[in-house]
Length: 295
Image (cartoon, rainbow, N blue to C red; front, side, top):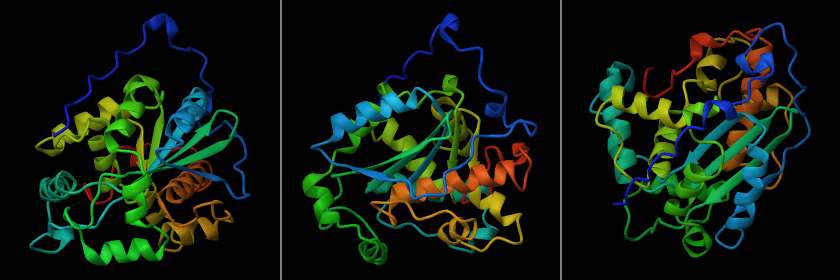
């Protein structure tokens, strides 16, 4: 098991900017920068370009306001004994924890939206998974293969999750509650749980929901949103992230339109459109609610 990285200390008070734009706090009266409708490029990250792309991410993250995360993983090997909707939040979390602790992530997609309305996205391909040695769900690997993910290429050319976690936690500029960023995901219990696993160096997740929520707040802050719940309250929208994004007029991301970073881009675009469209800037009731955990 990997050792946990020590969380970086918060910056001293005299370095915290005091001039964030009002829309950072989801103010309904402030018009956000327009979202780009053109295809957003996705940068694939492997071992050979990890250092270069990490530096680019860090530079862009200096102006970050919103971050979306999507993780591809090799299925689910622990299943509930009854209908998911009949489970309590603690039972749902126990299931998430059992699976995330047992499995190795395959890809981590990160999309960042900055104060100028620009979006950049990175798809970190991870090398730790071995098909013949590690637990997985065969149908899930087949599904991901159909979308263009080759786990053997990941094993040969990817970056290890430990290095990714050290980069994200240590110098990406994205991790830490004092950053005040808004984090976005879609059906996000597993995506957020895997992200916490990565940034803690592979440690087991906390034992209960309270511990998990505390970890999320420590590493990501308290502005975490799941687009699935927001979209469910918009009857005109179709079901499924790709369909929702297409319905709203967003072009598929360019370069890797069907994998983890593309899902992050779509989640970010849909969140921003709904936040300042259907919800008029008032999305507080969705804060901290992850599909697959609280509902």
